[in-house]
Image 1 (spheres, rainbow, N blue to C red):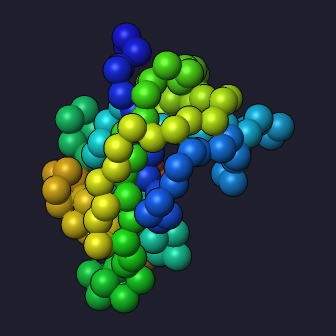
Image 2: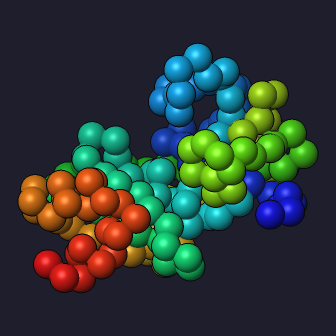
Length: 158
């Protein structure tokens, strides 16, 4: 994949002036602090779903999906505002062998946003960016978690 002109980064912080490298969820032991971003606004939107709710995010070709272990009400009770920031891609690189492949790009340097879109709720960002939202019971969620590559097939057959 050629380097896109822009990247997107989601944050619950609405007034970020510069993203500093950090790594709250390392993909492997000893990974450096990084700024994470994606060339897909849809994927960034998925990262606005509250972390207090068990979720699985997936991309199936041109279909973007968030699987939630819970109900619409669970999401509604926990949903918060957030922003999707547009970032210059200059310092970003990707390694298709780790993480989310060419869906996930990283920068070792701080990055200043070019612009942002603020959403009152994560569900607003998901809908605007055509991300499919699936509310699953414990059993179906566990099946998707065990085989995320087939998540859509599992949900459709349940």
